[in-house]
Image 1 (cartoon, protein in one colour):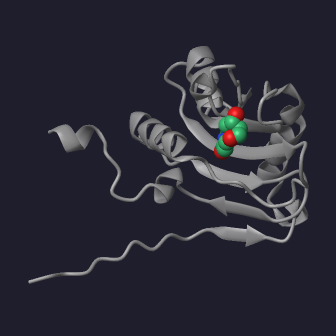
Image 2 (tube, rainbow, N blue to C red):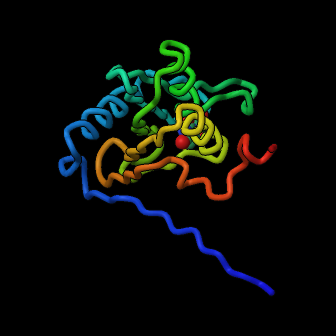
Length: 162
Ligand code: THU
C-alpha cells in the first residue's frame, strides 16, 4: 500500500517593510545596512544577516568569499558562528537576511541555501527554540516565517542516528 504525505509550510508576505512589527523591521534594517560589510569580490552579491539573540543582543554576519570558490561561506552561517562564538549557550530568536546585488536590482527576497538550511535546523535543535526568518532585498517584498526548519522538511538530524 502506498500512502501520500504532504508538507505544508506557512509564511507571511508583506509588500514592504513598513507593515512589519517594529522588532522585525529593525532587524531587517540592520541586515540591509550590513550588506556593505560583505566580502564578495567574485559574485558581487553582498549578503548580510542580522540575528537577534535571547539576551537582546543583535549580531551580524556577511558572506565571506574565497578565490577558491567552494571555500566561501554564506552570511547565514557566518552570523550563526558569530552568535555562538560571542554568546555561547544563548539562543538565536530571529534572523533577518538581505543582500545587495551589484549587477541587478535587489528588490525580491532571497532564501537560505541548502547548507544554511541544514545549519539553521541544527541551531534550532541545539537551543530547542525556533528561529524566525525575515527575508528581503534592499527594498520591496518581505517574506517571514516562524520556524527556519520549515524550509527543511525531512531533514537529517541527531535523531536520525539514534
Ligand atoms: N549567499 C549567501 O551568503 N546567502 C544566501 O542565502 C545565498 C547566497 C552568498 C554565497 C556567495 O558568496 C554569494 O552569495 C553568491 O552565491
